[in-house]
Length: 241
Image (cartoon, rainbow, N blue to C red; front, side, top):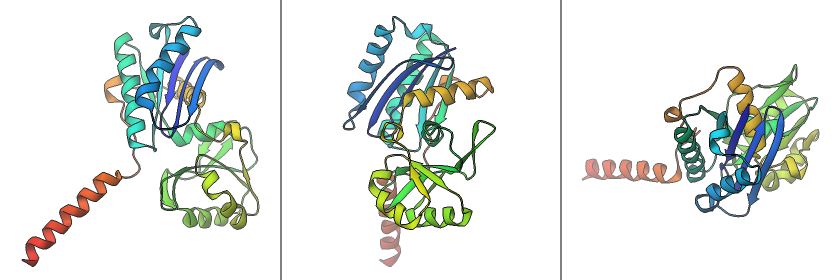
């Protein structure tokens, strides 16, 4: 089964084509948030170099979040349009699942962490069970110290990856003496991991109609939170007057 996957959940724009368990090709750029200009040309060039067309794909996969609100919308919308054009199924892959998949077999916990600003992270904790990653926790958006408390309570070795590693590496090493970090080439999002997780989900029947594919947000955007706060302030002013 050929899968075309994209990940635009962070500053990384990544596109991959996988056939079964083999990566046919993968492009990735980690520079700045310009996915609206770069994503479609990356897909077009990758398919051209592989001498494939969108119609040759059996499945399309998109990283659905958490992550950048704008980036996720770009990736999900692009995959929806491609799948609709060639009438193929899609699968939405949680970003944290794909990040955890980056980490090879490890005797301990796997904890991807994505920067959510203000010392907060998007995260989940995983463990490999019978060769498959299993979530130990739900997807979470929480303060870094809360995550550290959770991991200390579990009392196991843990390996981190994700873009928040570079922000908090020294602090994590100080607080968690047994922690490890994925190598640099496995630290950030990769569309090939999205494809592999998406393929596994499809094999378990977890496919979607392209119209049903939507981003997964753990919390509201900053703009939405500001609007809500402004709305509450206007209500208070109304009653105060």
